[in-house]
Amino acid sequence: MSSRWVPVFEGSMPEVLVLQSSCEAGGIPTFVPDLNLAYLDISARGGNMFAMKLLVPEDRLEDARDLVPLPRRAGIPEVNPDAEELALMARRVRICALLIITAPLAILFYLEYRKRALDAAELPQDHAQTRLAFGFAVAVCAGVLLYGLSRFLALAP
Image (spheres, rainbow, N blue to C red):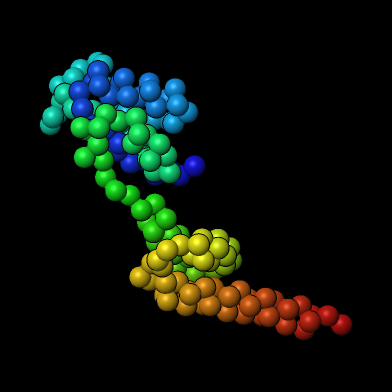
């Protein structure tokens, strides 16, 4: 299940609650931000206080889209979850490699990134930098291991 929530419907509270119960009955997890606050004081949210949003995990967006009434489907955003998630994974690899102490994590994250990148339709624009960061992380880890091994062998009688 995806960890990112995307809006599938925006409308009045009764409309959102009916659609939420339909989604939940179909096995689609849902989330309505500020729902409890709207029950307590509708004006506390500010802005358009009568409009509520129904969020679903982005990997279940297509299932939830089928439950939204036809005239209201125009406002549902198009989401490409693979590209966005792949870009976040690539960024995580680069950050871990640059922090040096987390270089082993960069290697692990890159292995997962590479597995998903092979299945992706398009690669993130920073793919070359991600591969470079992976190489740097491997070099750092190898250097630390070789240094530790040389110190160990130097202490051996």
